[in-house]
Length: 112
Image 1 (cartoon, one colour):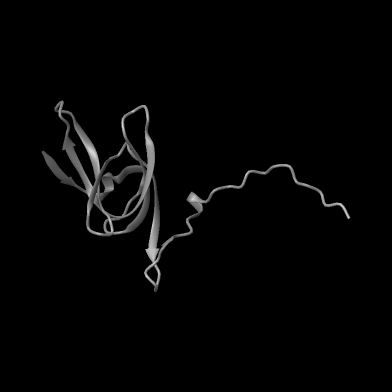
Image 2: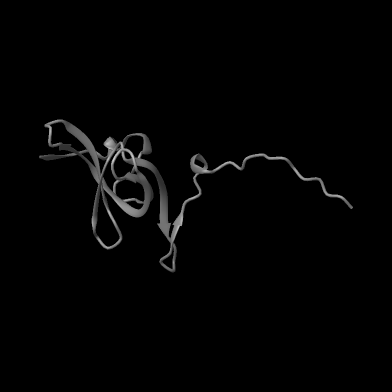
């Protein structure tokens, strides 16, 4: 059983309906999990019923070829906004919240 909910159910990532993202998500059983990244368009949030009858939040995406991707909110690790440039290449938007900091290590002094 599924029920369509508002896109606000996307939670901590503040996903916009119809927007392009590069998402990082977990796949596999709880022990040997692997992180996968995909370019997707956000299609909305739904509530799904699991085999044990519990209702869980799910995020619906579409991959570039139109293939669907449904993720539990607990599977989603990161969602970075993206756009296609004039040549059709996907470019990640420069979002300060996602910027990685460089670790400040020892600076090597130059000797002349």
